[in-house]
Image (cartoon, rainbow, N blue to C red; front, top):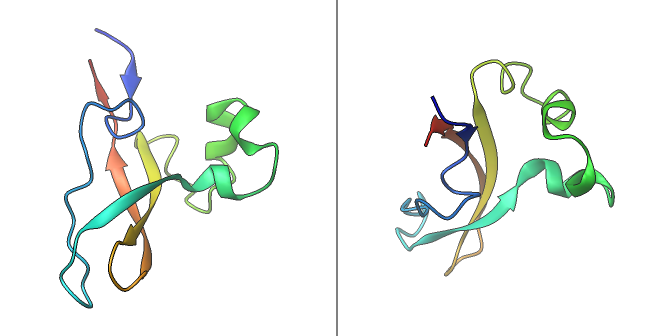
Length: 85
């Protein structure tokens, strides 16, 4: 079995969601943990998963991403299921 990784972070898949407000394309703005503070991108991933606001994200192997509408600017979060590759 390979490593369990986020397909969005690793460029294997792309966000294909549509905005619930205006139906335009939503684009990935990165992992939510990268927004917590200046040092978050450099912290151990499993450690930051404990502080991303979702107590289960480390155990259920989900990566929480920030997505934004290209048209109206609506910002949402999306849980990405991590998988073995």
